[in-house]
Length: 274
Image (cartoon, rainbow, N blue to C red; front, side):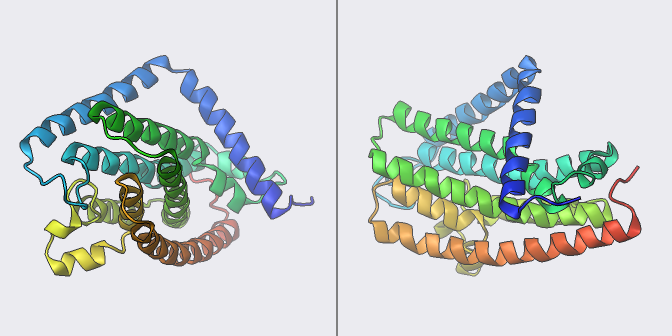
């Protein structure tokens, strides 16, 4: 059986999982309501927290207000979660229900099948993240130039690709060891504490600020906030370079991890784990 070309297989896999995910999501209206209520609750709590935080609004690190700062971090965190936690969960689900075995019998390579798995979750997180960031700027009356808004959304897409590559590393652990929680948990905790999601990294000790700046989410947030806050474009470029470096390392790790994992499970016959 002839395999599809890499690009065709990847695009086809992404489209298929996007379509199936959308159908599944639309089939459960209460799930949509539950997610919207959860998002709304977090945003309201961040709004109250913003009234308790005394900040200098002229400080570039915090932007117009802590509310805007925190909601932007929360929106990026949703993109991160969709490619780490949900990615690993879906791969585990596919194993338990024999989906991976069925996929391996098609013309689509297993690696492309895995890369397409987070298609809907990633797309949905990008859409809701854009809505959250746009909504908070609208509510607070903070104007953002269209060019800067488009740049921020492009940064979010690039960050999503880097996060997805990191999720592939965790997925490789699921395939081989039947669990990927240790890596996912460690990266998530580090992201929440040191990545600048809800607390500016400038408030951390120097020995935590520097390594925290190389977490995948940190340069993405630095670049996005600089773009949204109207900072010079040079302030956007520097974190983008860091994101590109981190992304390059993560992509290499993902390619190696997935190749080793697929070879291992095909050799052992454990692609489906029951």
